[in-house]
Amino acid sequence: MDYGTLKIVTGVLVTIGLYSVLYRENKFYRLVEHIFLGLASGFAIISYWKETVRTDWYDQAFGRVGETAADTQPAFWMYAALLPIAMMGYMAFSKKNAWMSRIPILIIIGLWAGQQIQVFNNGWIPQLLNTMQPIYPTNMTRFTVPGTAGLSNADITRIGAEVYPSEALTNLALVITFITVLSYFFFSFDLKNKFIASTNKLGRYILMVGLGAIFGSTVLMRFTLVIDRLFYIFIEFFKRTVFKME
Image (cartoon, rainbow, N blue to C red; front, side):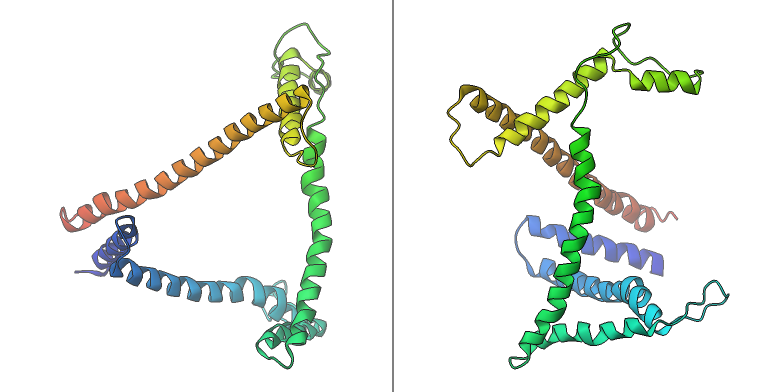
């Protein structure tokens, strides 16, 4: 048995071992699971060193000599001061000096809190602004947006500034969806008003449709993984072992 065949056979056995948990818990699944977790842990350590610690701290602190001048990076010794701060996190295992582990935690939380302001400004504010769309058409000459192929930049800009009936309906659906879904999360007062109660119910239905679509896409994604594994077992395995095809 050559190396290629051995690799495919091993892959098939591991795949069957992982999916055997669908029948019931068994020792074969446990063995494959422990092997997978061990390999994943080792890979994560190497990946964390190469992609994060070395590039973001070690090369910054001690410099890097590259093959060319562009690849050479000077040392900034101020980065080395981060090492004792990071090592304080391991003081959590010491009963006497456990308080020192709070220092890097506070620094991380402070930096994270500051970054979240920028994340909110760059991520959520544009989404809120995008919900403020015009719902009244400004051009009734046609229902849909005309094509822009072959038109001048001035005509394209003019068409983009107009709101056609199809766009107005789309924007109206967006605004209604946003308001009704937002009204579903009004938990601080009793919904006695019939209009608010109806809006709340509509928002619940829209949420159910959205969550159902997300769940359906997740299930389809899982099926693609299963189909890939089945293809590997029934096509690659038999082609390499039974039919002796490269």
